[in-house]
Image 1 (cartoon, helix red, strand yellow):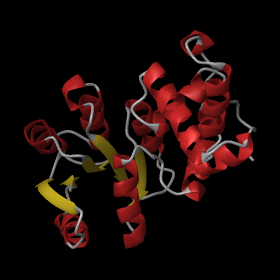
Image 2 (cartoon, rainbow, N blue to C red; image 1 turned 90 degrees about the vertical axis):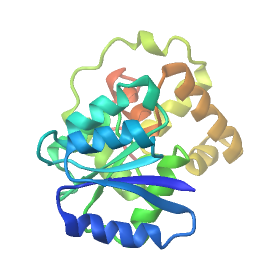
Image 3 (cartoon, one colour; image 1 turned 135 degrees about the horizontal axis):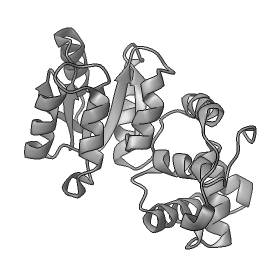
Length: 221
């Protein structure tokens, strides 16, 4: 059972998401929160698998609440999906850096919402390839000068190669085809890379790929 917490200051938004999610045999909404402080308390008490977190909320906004969740080692298994009105909201990029696993626009299709919830639990962050590539392209355009690549010293050459492909938005299946290996082998390389770098999921691997200079803007394609 995937346990979900809904955090949004609009009751109608929460009600719509709850109705959709509770109708699924493998998903359960364990709590709702109307602001960031309430969400944080509920996360600490209930330890949900996924938090659907609105960016703009009273008391404590979703970005600050996400930083507190992802910064707490006791909540390492909790995944956060940010909810935003606009697909390329400025706060989305800060949220991904802060450890959010991805984002959804509030008017997303029901099937996409369900895929997103299941995807982040499986560690396959950033949702659909189209949304992934748009996010990465925008992230690349806004990224600062790359930091020193010393953090990548623990990676093998193949793991660096895999990380670069994750960084340009490829799925495990696409990586497998590119490297002529099985999807399971590609997934194993991605998992090992995340463990070595202490990344929560693929979203953070993308961030690290750009911040380390392993991938540069213009490499999409």
